[in-house]
Amino acid sequence: MTVSNGYSGFLIKPTLRTRFYVDYDWWQRSQEDLRIYLLSHIQPVQRERLSKNSRNAWIDFIDPDTGEVFRMDELTFAIRQAALAPDFINPQTSLVDSVFRVFLANDNEPQNPLQLAELTGRSATTILKTFGSTRIYKGIRPWLPEETDAD
Image 1 (cartoon, rainbow, N blue to C red):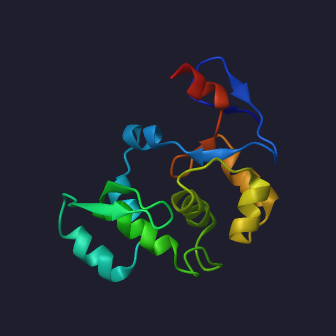
Image 2 (tube, helix red, strand yellow):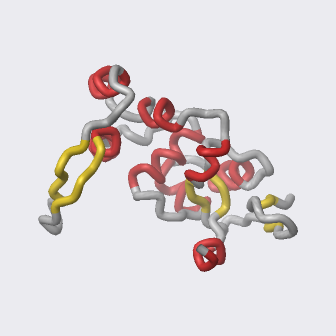
C-alpha cells in the first residue's frame, strides 16, 4: 500500500521503521477543530474552565530542568500537566488517541510503530496498519525528513 504525503508524484510505503508525527497543517485543512480535540486530552476541571473561553491566556512557564522562562498558552500548559499523569496513555484510550497523546507528551517528536507500540502498549503491526493507510487520522501521518529540508 502506498501513502501520498501531500506532494504530487511522491509516494511511500510505510514500514515498521517509518516514523510518524502529527501534521498540524492537516488540521488547518480539515473540517475538524484542533482546539476542541486538544481539550479532550486534558483533565476535566481544566477542560471545563478552558472550554468557557475561546481565547487562551498566556502564562510565564519556567522550565524545571533549565530554569528558562518562556510564554505558553493555558491550553498548552494544561496538556503538559495532563501528560505527566501516569494514566495519560492507558488501555482504555483508543489507539488513535493514545498515539496522538504520545506526540502531545513528546513535543511531536517523530516515532516509528515499534516505538509507539512500546509507549502505548499496542501492537506495532496494528499501529502501522492504522497510520500507514491512505486515511489520515487526527493529522498523524508519515514523517518525511526531506519535507523539513525544503522549508
